[in-house]
Length: 99
Image (cartoon, rainbow, N blue to C red):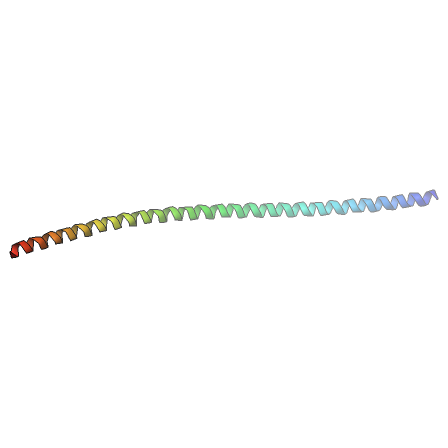
């Protein structure tokens, strides 16, 4: 009877050892997946950061161009106003000369 119990305990121990080994392999597999996922996330974040810097640079450039365009518009509006004023002054002068 003692041999049977010992034999069963050995079988249980063997099964337990196999279960532990399988669990450790599964744990290593999951840890590797987590590591791979974290690595991928890090790469995605680095790529995203580079893209953000590129977009920010483009934005700054576009804002600068808009500012230059606004300045040019104001300058042209001033020139047009001066031309209209000169033309108005010339028209007034011509009207005076006609009389």
